[in-house]
Length: 192
Image 1 (spheres, helix red, strand yellow):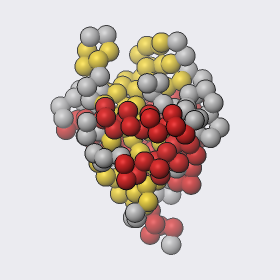
Image 2: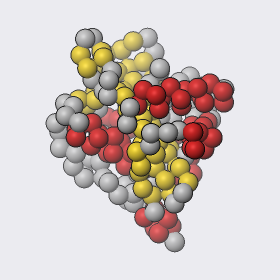
Image 3: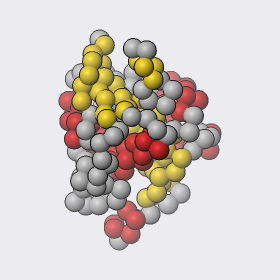
Image 4: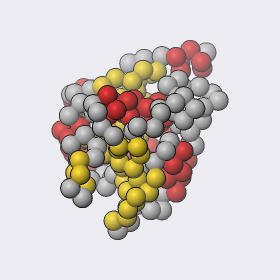
């Protein structure tokens, strides 16, 4: 029965957050329930942050659904500039704690990276808390490397020209493909 539920997980691009706002806010707060360094804790602030994300995503907001229910999301902003160069940034990757450890973070990441690659981008970046070592390891396994530091944040970048092989990022959610539950649970905001 569990395998049938996994098969129902699909990722959809969304352009309007209103119908999903309360569920996405709950997922965010549940996923970050123990993260007091890098996440927003106030529900009102999380709601404003989600609105900011959809506004800046411009097509780069993807939600994973199990049937009709959201279970995770990733947000990428293509129009970011860093040191004079346009480099898209992943602002958020969040997986419902009940779905962590099933490869859903990898599935969402694969969707976002393919989206950017199809738009012609050559690299992508994200920010992660310097003390969030589990998230750093998760991103490193996906080919991201630390390129700079600003305060308590590390900037990690990935070359999108690298093959998005199934060995690194699988498009299926399976029992054998387990992202670290700790790293998905402690994924951090990009600091915006």
